[in-house]
Image (tube, rainbow, N blue to C red; front, side):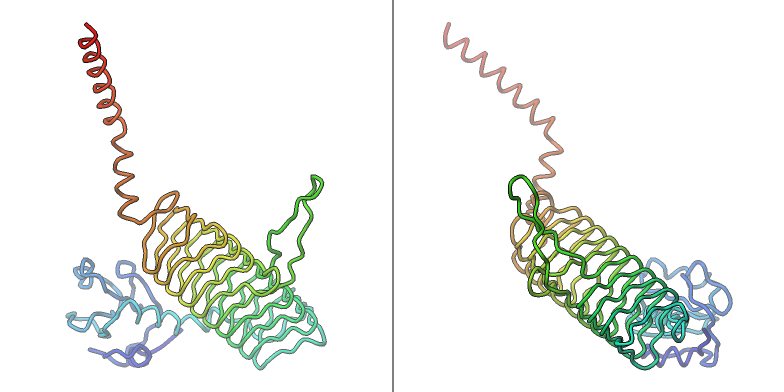
Length: 344
């Protein structure tokens, strides 16, 4: 993991001020730096720390100058640093090479160029793995499943049969793609299973966290759109459509046949009732329970979820309930006194 400051600046489309040949061997936060490290500063409250950091170089906003330090100026330091992490860490992250001798690969499976498969993986009949894809130890790839190019499937991931995964998809450990949808019919006091014969489609540039479950559709496909990012411990039920560039944060639960329109955000522990639509660009706030469809560009909160400002107002009144009880009790006492006077 060694790059010159000039190489990094070219990659992030920034401008070097200082030593272009400075060798960067590590990355760090602004307070944890040491010699050879590159850090960044984007928030103005951290600007005073740039003079104290021991990092050798800093990615900064365009207007900043740091005495005694080499810097890379860029319009978006946070994004530039994230790209640098990707540049410097890819080689370590995907360090396995070739096919491990303990991997079980069907003779009818098709592997592209430079595919790496770790120990104890199972690749079933007619599966197809694209060029430069890395599959880490203990993964299961079901029959007729397709995985595109430059994907990274981390250890102990299960991708069941007839699943389609696009290019540059990252799936973290313990995730299950294509488990059966939760469908049963109650007959004579027994729960009879409804066969789930559909599939799951994961489009390009999706990232899926650890221990996520995405159920296959009953008939057609459960679809995760291009560029969507899913955090750890999320459940997406059968027949859901998650459009492009959505953010789904940890412990969200999405019931069957929900449509989440593009550029929406579902915050931690939100729950969505089945067959609803979350409108484009909407935000479902943390722990909201959505029981009705949400219009585009809305922010909802609470249970049942309501427009954010209304929910805040209701919550403010709830905090004053003891005060309201005192008022009601006082009013009731005065009414009783008035009624007694009228009777007398």
